[in-house]
Length: 279
Image (cartoon, rainbow, N blue to C red; front, top):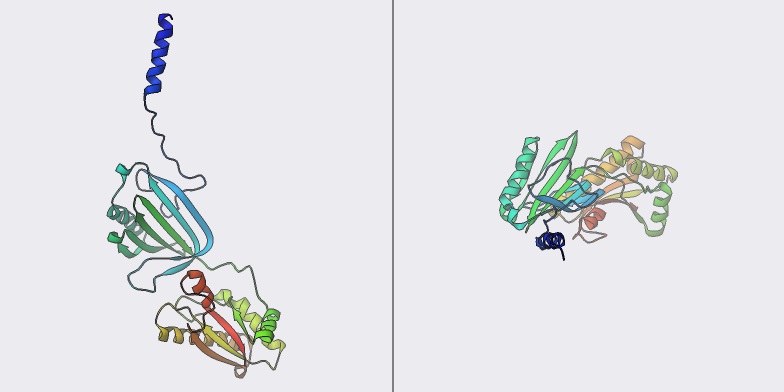
């Protein structure tokens, strides 16, 4: 074996014996920082992300009911490249709080001991909520851009009539209210219009308009709220559609007749409804 061959072999052995440099950890394909927080804590990469165009997001608080926001929900999970580069929960929480304040937002809840903070801000006229949580080495960021659901399935007067005939009552899920209030949202107009069409198509039909709530909050408050919401629907039928008030009666059932468990947001959403009951 000549000297050149020996030298080449030794050089090769030297390189192969060195430990390979650790490649920087990359974000999961398809994931990116949310525009509300366009940068991130140092030495972080995105492990996972999930975006739903319409969902419900709950936010931590000291006293229930905690805020629940419906709209576009984004959840991003950040990992750290090396455990030695991790930052304390306090530093993480304070960084996000300060970033929110700089764009005019308000911190609603902050508990560094529980490693969580949340708040809200109005961006381009839209209310946006966020929550940051430090779970071991990872940072979880939840952002909910508040908006009304785009209704794709619309019940009509004919389906209402069929349900009333077969069961004596029908749930109307297209009637929406401001959170904790009896103010009917504008997007409820189509559903209320179909109720009016039902009543105009059958001059002898009389209805109880029954409001229902979930089980969050005091029973007395929910009873009062459910009746106020039922009355608001009644008034919309009378004032906007010319239905005789004598054909309608408002009633509040509060949380007493749920159609789903109140343990999940999906169940609570189903329980918050207006029903028509044949008199």
